[in-house]
Length: 353
Image (spheres, rainbow, N blue to C red):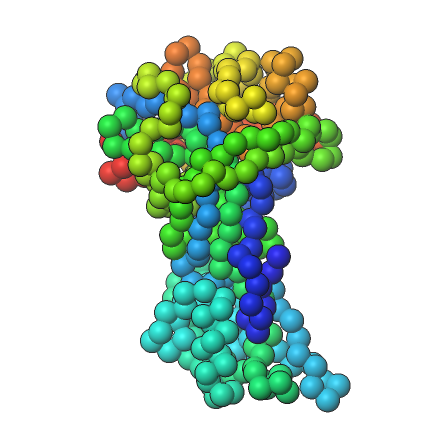
């Protein structure tokens, strides 16, 4: 649901499974500006995840996701377009005051009394300013002709935990806006435990999904949203999670052939399922580094292949953690893509060690 800045809505629900970049997998956007070169992680050991997690987050500023023209005496007007604003711009300030939410922006526009406002925004990572003059709505308020988004919630899968410091990474791709395809500019986020209540099985042309609900309380904090996944800190390792740490396989170690994926389905128990890895692109720095094919008959029977909510499911090969599932092919849900674990670690900075 979009937010108009002249109205107040409940926080936008991103999707049950945090995988809008998973659905249109063949054309899913990579975000080169947010991809870092992997460091030397050859001696790194990590605890595989394979468990679901929930996030609720707010954005850093508000993201423009659409425009709504204003009719006055039969003529259409749009102050935001006239100010040169575009979809995907992130509004950060009115004058010197930061924009904390869509409601906050609405309040600042109302307080303007229709006078021109200086808007600071970012576009493609660069900051700019413009002047926006709201129009009266005839009911004591003002309109700007914008739809914006400022929050989200959903479910994904933890890929790994870093032993000793509680850091985790998941998804293997970024949380992207459903309308623009852009990374959501994360301000802050809370992590919650999740119980999987069922599975909608995927079929050709219609991706499936894991259904679930959030637990009460907060078990961690989301710190980053990148093209190669999300990361943050858990207060403590989840109960029942095996503590065994695995060495990682570098992009050079990974080989075509059998592997295993760890994920949690309706039984709410983490299980291992057989897959096959092929078409490895050892130079890939984004979230599509190799092809994953589900071969396990049990997983195929229950899910049809890769479904929404499995993004981030860790992949093991020859006793090493190699990466995670990230995308699915719409017309063949048994096939998708995976990311090198190195690419996820490279986004985490000091938390990776």
